[in-house]
Image (cartoon, rainbow, N blue to C red; front, top):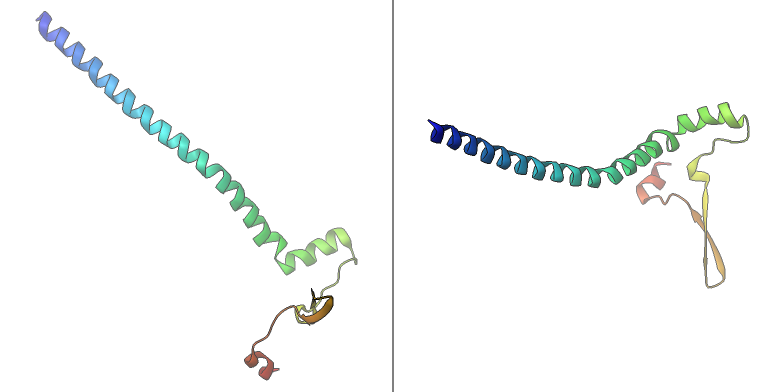
Length: 106
């Protein structure tokens, strides 16, 4: 009877040890993955902020009215020009380059 009790206790201790080791390995993997995810979450937050707030014309107009009153004006992007310097010469071109089809439509 004593041998069965000692054998059972030994098997339970061995099983507990194996479970603890496997749990520790899983926790280490989870920690490493969470550490890798942390900077990605921060970058995602920044990208969502830019996409949702900074790049939305409606949101910009709302912020203009709320914070800047009449300091900002709405402008057609096709009227914006791009300045480039090459060999001490300044070249003025459209900010948005149009294809031949787009020029024909207008």
